[in-house]
Image 1 (cartoon, rainbow, N blue to C red):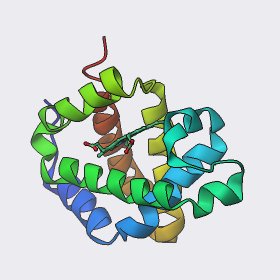
Image 2: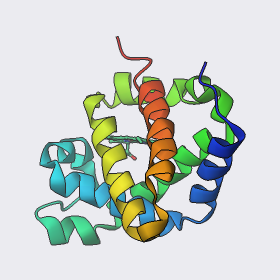
Image 3: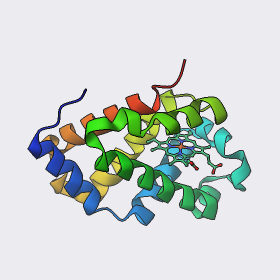
Image 4: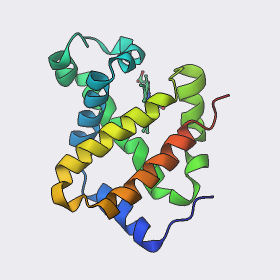
Amino acid sequence: MVAWSDQERSIITSIFSNLDYNDVGPKALIRCLIVYPWTQRYFASFGNLYNADAIKTNPNIQAHGTKILHGLDRAVKNMDDIKTTYAELSVLHSEKLHVDPDNFKLLADCLTIVIAAKMGSGFTPEIQETFQKFLAVVVSALGKQYH
Ligand code: HEM
């Protein structure tokens, strides 16, 4: 089990409570699809992903980016049991969507970049340390049902 100090809990809660999910979620997913174009293959049913502009303005991508942030919100609210919280989501990504679990890390990195840009100098190394720990637990939990 992962242990969280009170300080780490308050850092994670405060980062997320200050985020606009409708802004940050789409930006992170858009960045992932442009920077790592092979991730586009999972979104074949989402319509036009022909170039960066098409990806940026695709309403299905925007909606899905927001959905991912709401997915992360569940981990924030269940920090002591992220593994169980994500068991079903892990099965979905593995068995139904066949998403290569390496991609979780790539999306997590894109999210870090978007949040760092938003927070500016407020995204101190200490804040990043806690945020990376949180994302590492999320990525590991999402990969748990792969075999
Ligand atoms: C931080 C990592 C991620 C989180 C928290 C997350 C969360 C979610 C959530 C909440 C859903 C909706 C599940 C449902 O409808 O019940 C979903 C669906 C999906 N995810 Fe992820 N996801 C992550 C990473 C990824 C990555 C890296 C990819 C592919 C590169 C991916 C591809 C998909 C696809 C294709 C769907 C189904 C979309 C649809 O057809 O509506 N996910 N994800």
